[in-house]
Amino acid sequence: MAVNVNANADFPFREQYSDVQIMSVDELHKNYDKAVVIDVRSVHECSVIKINKAHCLPWSNMGFENYLSDFRLKKSQTPLVMYCNGHTCTKSYLAARVAKRKGFLNVYSMDAGIFDWAEKYPDLTTLLSETPLVRSKLISKKELSKKTISFSQFQELLNINAQLLIIDIREPRQRKKNQVILNSHEVRFVNFNHLVENVIKKGLWKNKNIVVLDAVGKQVRWLQYYLNKYGYLDYHFLDKGVSNKYLQRLLKNN
Image 1 (cartoon, rainbow, N blue to C red):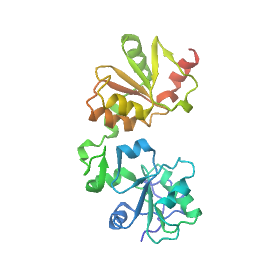
Image 2: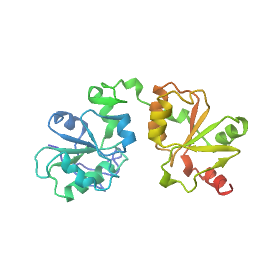
Image 3: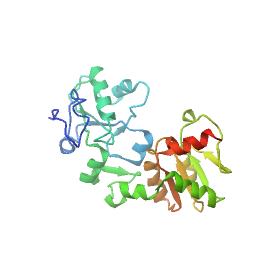
Image 4: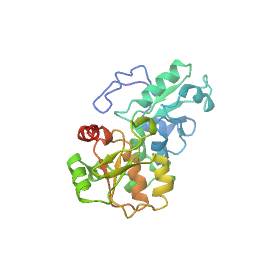
């Protein structure tokens, strides 16, 4: 079975979480039939791509460690394997550490993450409810960057396009205001799930020029899968989302 290994450049947090046992992608594959696999990312991320048999249990859930008992007994010898986006994501380490402290045995982090797994074992990966995974449908960082615009580019769109649709997908608790106006454009607040289920999947706003804002530029990565699948072409994401320092200055003046 897997043991912990030394940190290296590909896994910069292994040394920090040296108390957590590591299971490699190949080791998880060998133990696939018997392991209990937990995807500790957000519901949005898990709904886009996941290991086929994984249970979605976000690390951010209150009482995370209590819910683990729904999937495996504490003293079981069955491997309990946590994973997240891997490499520079620490969620799987944190989840494994908490499970271990709460008395769960045989707990591991598959810290290579979902994308390393998907590249190697597409037949055991689900992408947007479809399996096996078609590798060509994975969105690269380059593809994401093509749709990511700077603040100056965003301003140009605001100035030249009166029909520009600006969508803020942050959760209500992340917002200080219920309404924001940018250069005479009203920002529409639509949470991620509502946008996907009631707008994107129904083909609404497909003829609109859309700019999506999230908190720090991370959620849009998952939204892009739905936009692409349902044929949206004219969309962009603001670099770093609402945390963009130039947008913050503009908001303070509104």
